[in-house]
Length: 171
Image (cartoon, rainbow, N blue to C red; front, side, top):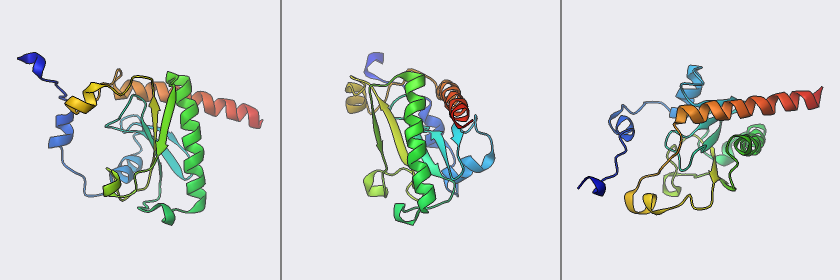
């Protein structure tokens, strides 16, 4: 019966796709194709990128340009910028989507759930009441209301507005 199945055809590209020899975060940020690679903001030492396999709509990651696998090896200035960009990510998400809450954190090491375990990064996950439902529990599927490309457009516009406001405050 068709109703017994949940289709997620976009996952096949990931399943069948070639796994890169190098760190995926380093590869994406190095290409300079921000829209295609879902990079919504670049700072001096860190960048913000949409998670390609998000828990909720607008799930971003904040990562340093430097390839560092351990939090305690991260330069203090990059660590400070990561937190600052996490704060700004919350502001951008507020403007774009108005979530009711957030999960912010890092999965350090494979046993802690890190999908990219050799490049430290923070997750900023917007949350809404009721966004955890039976789909991830029973179907191991997440339901997202917006395409990643559209999320990039919305978040990039929110970041541009934040940047302009900060420039005006500094003037």
